[in-house]
Image (cartoon, helix red, strand yellow):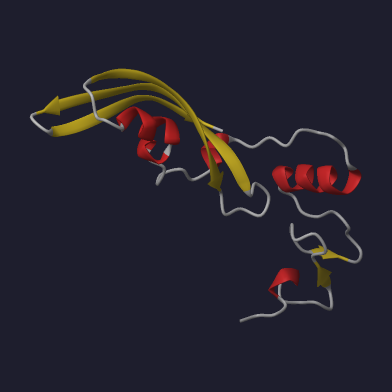
Length: 128
């Protein structure tokens, strides 16, 4: 394990005081990533500037509708029919800048049952 990984492995020439990215003693700019710069300005300067991020850059491939409590509640009892879903849940992006965000699931949940076996389909959108 590299104990100096926080400063690009070079603690003599770099530091990373806020955990955003390494900086040198000469160049105090945290880095070139606009999201990181916005986070840095918000954290250090108290700018009040809203932090925004393109949702497409957040990996949500493993998120399933069944993880949302609104879907779980609709599926409880498993009755055939359609239900409008508008649910939210916390999501860890595993990113230093984004951290935890809230995902929102909106759409229609359709449940169909044959005998005692039920299945569902969901048509809608996922946003942050």
